[in-house]
Image (tube, rainbow, N blue to C red; front, side, top):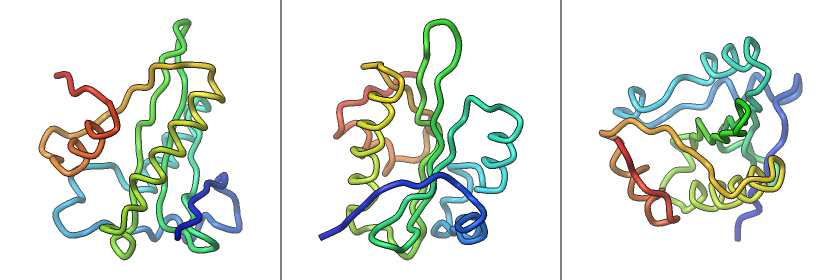
Length: 133
C-alpha cells in the first residue's frame, strides 16, 4: 500500500528532487526539474512540490493558477524511473487534482502534454481529462 503525499520544495529535499531521472526516451516529454524550478523562481504563480511515497521522494510536480479567470494548471508531473509502472503516478495525480481544485476553488484543471507522450495521455484520459489540440 502506498502513502503518496506532497511537500514544498525546500533546502532539505531540493537536492534529491533535482536528481529525479526519467526512463530513456521520456526526456523530450517534459522539462527537467532544474528548468521547472528556475521557471518557478521567475513566476511565483507556480507551486513546485516533491512527491513522496512514505519517506521516499518519488517524483516532482508543479501547478499554478493564472489570470483573472483563475486558469489552473497541473503543468508538470514526473515520477522517477525507479518508481514508474507501480501505479504511483496515477495515485499522485488523483491526490494532486484534489489538492489543486480545493486550493484554488476550481472545477476545471488544465494539463500540458507532448502529443507523442501516449502513456501520459492514456492516464489522463482514464481520469476524465479530454485531449484537445
